[in-house]
Amino acid sequence: MIVSHMENYSTQLNDIFQALADPTRRAVLSRLGKGPASISDLADPFDMALPSFLKHIHFLESSGLIQTRKQGRVRTCVIKKERLAAVDAWLSEQRALWEDRTDRLEQFVTDADKKERQE
Amino acid sequence: MIVSHMENYSTQLNDIFQALADPTRRAVLSRLGKGPASISDLADPFDMALPSFLKHIHFLESSGLIQTRKQGRVRTCVIKKERLAAVDAWLSEQRALWEDRTDRLEQFVTDADKKERQE
DNA sequence: CTGATACTTAGCGCAAGAGCTAACTATCGT
DNA sequence: ACGATAGTTAGCTCTTGCGCTAAGTATCAG
Image (spheres, rainbow over the protein chains, first blue to last red):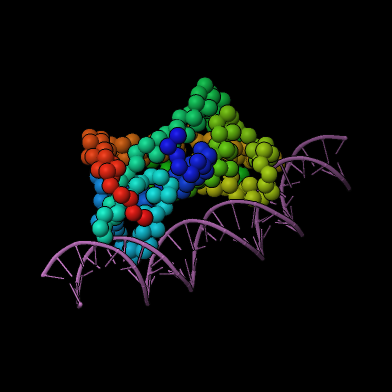
C-alpha cells in the first residue's frame, strides 16, 4: 500500500471527484499532462490572484492527483497518473453492475415515453 | 444534440464530477445500476431525513446522471448511463495527452527521489 | 547587501453544499 | 370521508469552497 494517510476508498473518491469538479483544476491537470511545470507557469493562463490559484494546487496535491517539490524558490508540479486509476476503477465497478441490465432500463425509458411527465 | 440546456462541456463536467464527489450520491447510482427504484426505496439505507436525501436526488437529476418520473404518489428514478460517458471522454482525453510522456514524467520522479523534499 | 522574483500565510467575504425540523400536498386503501 | 403513505416546500444552521488583498519569507541576480 502506497497510500500514506490510509484513507478509505470512498473518502479518496470524494476528494478526487471534488478536485475534478473545478475547471481550473482540470485545466491544470491537462497542462501537467504535457509535462512538469512551476506554480507561476501554471498560474499564468488564469486571471486569478496567485494565492487563490495556490489553493487549487494544494487541493490537487492533497487529493493525490499531483505531486510537488520545491527547489530554491520554485515549486515544480507533476501529475500523478496512477491516482486517476481510482476513477477508472469506480467507473468499471459501476459498469459491472449495469451489465445485463440494459433490457430492464430500456424498458423503463420506453414506458416513460408513452406517458405524461409531471414535475 | 440531445443536451437540453445546451451547457458547454466544461460546465457539464463540473456538475457531473461534483455529483460524484458525494458518497450518498455514488451509492444511489450504484443502487440504480441494479434497476429503477422509488425515492423511499433509495432513501431507506441512509440515516438521513427525507428532505436532505431529496436534495441529492435533485442534484443527480440536474446533473443529468439520473432521470425521474412520478406516477401517482411515487417517483421512480433511473440511472442515465450515457451521462457517465462524459467522464470517460474526459479521462480518455487526458490519457491522450500523457501518451509518450511517460519517460519525461518518470525522469522527474526519479530525480526527485535523489533529493531532499522541503515543505 | 539590495531589489526582484517566487511563492506563502493570514484573514476576510460571499456563495454553495449538506444536514435538520416543521408543515404542506397529493395519492391510495378501506 | 379518513388515515396512512410518499413526496415536497420552506427555512434555518453550519461548514466548506473559491475568490480577494495585504503582508511575510526565501531565494536569486547583481
